[in-house]
Image (cartoon, rainbow, N blue to C red; front, top):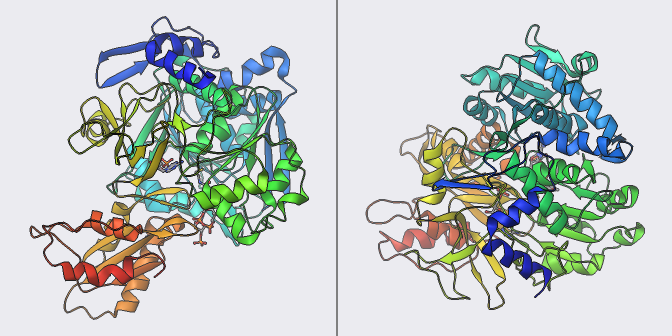
Length: 627
Ligand code: COA
Ligand code: AMP
C-alpha cells in the first residue's frame, strides 16, 4: 500500500488518532485531550478543550526555535517596482506592534476587524495581528465595490477597518479609501476606527477622530504578546458567494485550521521549514488565506506575496522571473492565470529564459483545470501539474494528488483523489450513491475534517439549510461530477447559481438583484457562459417592461455599469442582452438550470414542463459559447 492509501485508510479507521497525531505539529498553550466533539450532530467541533494562538504558531515559535533570521515573507511588487523581505524575527516584531495598535483602538479577543487592502505586507501583518489578539479578521477582496463591502460590514460588525489609500492595477490606480468611506456611509453598522496605510503612489485624507495612519500608530505602538484562545474560537470570517445575493460568512476556527494547514502544507504540497511557497492568489480569497498567509508560516517556510499579474506586469514571463528571483519551490495559482500566460507566450519561450531549478511542482485550483491548460503547463515546465479541488468552505483540498506523501499518477481533467478526512460520495437526487462513472452531486460524509467550516457566522440555521439539509449526514459541495474506476474524481461544475470567473467565485443571484432593481427591467436572469480565457463570464438576459422609453442598447449599457458600481469590477459583467422572453415552466418558474447548462456548452434535457420551447430556442444564439 502506498503512503497516500495508508494515510487515507488510517484516517478512516481511526480519525481521532490520525488528527491527534497531526495536532502534535502545533504548539498548544493547552494541548487537546479531546479530539472530536460529536455530541451535537450535524455540528462537530475539533479539539474542543484545547487552547493555542495561531499567530504564535506562525511566527514566535520559529523565533524561539532559533530560526528568527530565516526568511518569512518576501513581498515582490512589479506594479510599484519594489520588493521587501522580512525574517521571522522582523515579521514577529511588526505583527506584535500592529496588534498593539489594534488594541489601542479597542480591539480585543472576539472582536471583528475588516481588512480591505491590496497585496501589500501590511495585509499579512494585519491578519496575523488580529490572530495574535484573538480578534477575528474578515478580509474583503479589493475588486468588490462599496455596497459589497457594506454588506460584509453589517454582517461582521467590525470594531475596526484596516484599509489603504490605494491599490495598483496594471492600467490604473484604485483608490481604496473612497470605497471604504462609501461603504461606511452605506452600512448600518459603523466601525469605531479605521487604520489606513498611506501609499506614496496616492495619498488620501484621513477623517479626524476616526482614521489613523498605519505608520504612525503601528510605529509607536507597544508590542503585544499572543493571547491564547480556544481552539474552537473563530480565527477569521471569509465571505463567499452563495446562491442568493447575501454572501455567506464562512467561519474558520483556530485549532482545526492550524492542524489542517500544517498537515496539508507538508503532505499535499510537500513544503516544510526553509522551503519557499508562492500562492499567487489575492489574500481576499481562500487560497490567499490558507497558502499565502497561514500554512507556509505555520510550517516555518517562506511565503511570497506578489502584487502583480501573470501578464502585463511587465510580460508573460513575470511568474518565471519571481520563481528565479526567490527560489520558489512550489507555485500555486488558478488555471486562468496559466491561460493568460499561454495566450501571450504560446510557445513558452519566456519560460526558458529564467532559472526554474528550484521549482518542484505547479498546483492549480479555484476553477476547473481544462486538459489543454494542463497539457500546456506540464509541457512547458516538465514538472508535475497538480489539480486540486476545494472551496472557501473547506479551506484546504478535498481532492488532490498529495505530492508530500507520494507522487500519484496524474490524469488530465481530474483533481485526483480524496484527502484524508474527506469521505467523498457522489449521490443521485434520491441521496443514493451512484455507480462509478455516473454523474451526480458531489457530497462529503459528515463530519468534515479539521479546518473545514464549523458553521456560518452567527447563522447555524443557514449553515444547515445551505449545506446539510439536501442529504442527511452529508455536506453538499454544490459541485457535480463523477468518480472513475481508479477512484479519481472528475468535477464537472456547479449545480447551483454560483459561477467562477477568472478563478473568482461569484453569485449570479447578486447580479440578478442589481439588474432587477432597474426601473425598466421586468424580469431577468444571469447565467455563466463558458469562456475560453476566464472559464466562465456572466451574461445578463433581461426582459423590458412594456411602455418604457429607454432603448435596449442604452438599457444594456446602464445595467453593465450598475453591476460594476454595485458589485465591483471583479464581476466582469460585460454583456447584457435584452430579450423578448425568458424560458419558463408552466407554473412560471424561470428555467435557470436549463439555460445554465446550455451556456456551459452542454446539451440539457428540455424539461417536459416547459411553457414554450420556442423561447428557449430563441435564446440559443445568445447563450451558446462563442456568440
Ligand atoms: N482591486 C481592484 N480591482 C481589481 C482587483 C483588486 N484587487 N483585482 C481585479 N480587479 C479588477 C481588474 O482590474 C479588472 O478591472 P477592469 O474591468 O477595469 O479591467 C476586473 O477587476 C476584472 O479582473 P480579473 O477578472 O482579474 O481580470 P483581469 O483581466 O484583470 O486579469 C487574470 C485576468 C487572469 C490575469 C487574473 O484574473 C488572475 O490573475 N486570475 C487568477 C485568479 C486567482 O488567483 N484566483 C484565486 C483562486 S486561486
Ligand atoms: P472558492 O470557494 O472560491 O474556492 O470556489 C470553490 C468552487 O470553485 C468549487 O465549488 C468549484 O466549483 C470550483 N473549483 C475550485 N477548484 C476546482 C478544481 N480544481 N476543479 C474544478 N472546480 C474547482
